[in-house]
Each structure stands twice: as C-alpha cells, then as structure tokens.
Length: 362
Image 1 (cartoon, rainbow, N blue to C red):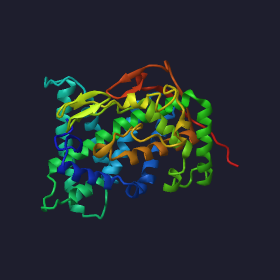
Image 2 (image 1 turned 120 degrees about the vertical axis):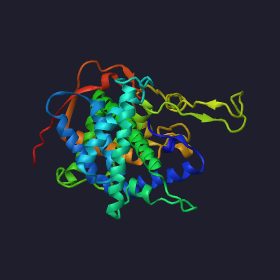
Image 3 (image 1 turned 45 degrees about the vertical axis):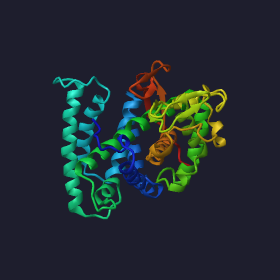
Image 4 (image 1 turned 30 degrees about the vertical axis):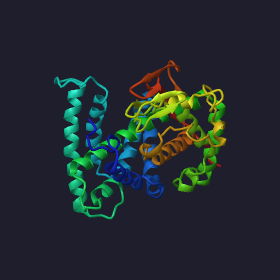
C-alpha cells in the first residue's frame, strides 16, 4: 500500500542514501523556513474547530499533520493538487489495516485504487516540478536532484513510494501524540495554566500574535517541550520495532541466536519504574534532566530512527502555542479508555468541543 521502495522497508546502501535525503529535507535549517506556513495551517485548523460543534480530535489532528506533511514534502503546493492528494490518501489510510481482500467495495480494494490515483497525481506534480526548475529545497526537489556515486537517479516509482512513506509517517504518529497531549493537558488544569503562562509570554512578545513565531522561540519553550516528551513516554505511540540478531547475543542469561527476530518493546522500557519512577503518572518534570541513554526512544533508535522527528516536534510546539493562547476545549463523553488503530489513541479519538477565548487588549 505504501510502496516497496519506501525508506523504512530497506537497509544497506539504498536505505542510507534515502535516509540522508529525508534528513537533509527535514533538518532544522530547512524546516525553520516552514514556520509561517505551519502556523497558517494550525490557525486555520483551530478556527475550523471552534464553532461549538463536537469534533473527533484525532481525526482533525490527522488533517493538520497531513497538511503540514504536504508543506515539508512539496513546499507551497497548488490547492487543487493538495485537495486531490488529501482525498485519495484518506481512502488509502482506511485500507492500511483492513483485511487484504480485493473484492470490489471493500476498504482494501478501494485503497488499492486510490493508491493508483496517488501515483497519477504525484506523476503530474513531478512533471510540473521538473518544468518549473525553481531553486526550491523541499523533499521532492531533493529526490529529483539525487544522483548516486554511479550517476544514477531515482526512478519515479522510488520517488512516489518515498513520498507516500513520508506522508504515512508524518500523519498518524504526530496526530496521535497531539491527541494525547490535549487529553493530558485537559486532565491537569494546573499544568495547562502553566503551559499557557509560558506561551502567553511569547504571544505578548509577538504583538499578541500579530508577528509569526521565530525559530528561537520554538526552541525556548521548556515546559511545553517537557509536556511533549512526557506525552511521548506515556503514550508510547511507536510501541515496538522489528529487528534481527546479526550475531549470537546473550541477554540476561538468555541466548538469542543469530538470525532470530527480535521485538524490542519501547512501551515496556518507557514504563519501567527503574528508569521512570511512578511511570503511570504524567509528570513532565521528570524531563528536567535528560533520561539515561537507551531508556527513552519515542522515535526509535539507531540508523532506522525516525528521520522526521524534528518537524514532528515543531508542529506540536506551533499548534500548542496557538491552541493555549487563543482557544479553550473540553472533552465530551467518556475520558478513559484506549483504542488501537493501529496506534494507541484515547477512546473514540477524544471527542471534544473547542471555542475561542477572548483576550482583552491592554
């Protein structure tokens, strides 16, 4: 469904080269230029939620993270292309975890057809990109300009698969974490007010939101950043990863033979009381000091760690800033329970009602 050439299905030379392309496209130096555009997407999303109607927080967060992902891949994309990508990807998204039957009318069959449409749409976008010859340094531009040591370029299928792969990685995980953050802040009003106070200082410095955030400001939100880290630990969106023992390994008296598959459980590590006392309590202060190495791995670890973790955190910081300074929300219905689809999210996607908060000008 994603495509066989996507980065996270490979290892070795192809993986290393493709990963470098993703990292360079989503490096701090590159994504800082996206702040005004991500802000615009965040404010537009929040405005659309604030009509007093009940929304699925997860569903709306997926829209936001998808639109932010589009920015990181294509930069400023034609609105028609953006809508076509969104419509087709939404169908593909429903097919990822459905029963794999090609019977017409099933979610899987619809997703396969939508994936073909995505190929066609991306082919048109690639064609336009080549013809424009603009000096942009977004992810697509980097894919198109890539040549390996033999002078070989990426095929269109390789480019398409990696774009779909980045969209997949950018949407669900970021949306799931943001949904948990809203729940944790909602459940602790004292913490919410502390985060709001931190963000209001930035809001005032920016002329009550009349000036955009700066990169330096997004790097100077210590409490908000600790809330994000603690949400990543508590929720452990990426619960595990797949690995293979390349040599015989002995671990705590147990032999793991070479070639055996290994499933490290990040959730067990993040909830281990030896590393995090009272692990089931939400406590951002535990990140006032850095955790011990290899005890906190929300984005994985090693050469297969998430290459887009910086932009994911940037999106969270920007959305939280505008949410707590301009809006309020309340969770509707049951506030307990977890669902998996496949990532852990609050029950029913955290139904909530949002409204604008009036702020008196001095």
